Image (cartoon, rainbow, N blue to C red; front, side, top):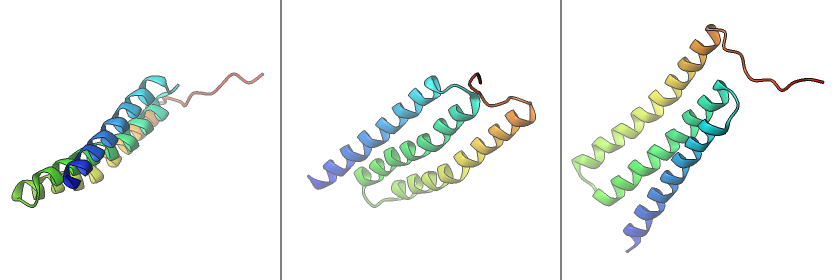
Length: 101
């Protein structure tokens, strides 16, 4: 019963964060804020969903593999976000600025 509660909780939170990241990608004004929304929130959302899978599976070799995937997500997603933003900066894609009057 308690196990099912935590699985549902983590799945719901992870799904909510991924939806929020998707909305951020659509709604934010420039490339850099969109990358920030996708990079930060998506990492946590994916990790929560995978954590729910670990709880559902219990202690097994599969849960160890999923845990290693979570570690890789925490290492690769922020690095990839940084490199994409740096490439955009070097390509002279400037941040959005409101008109100054």
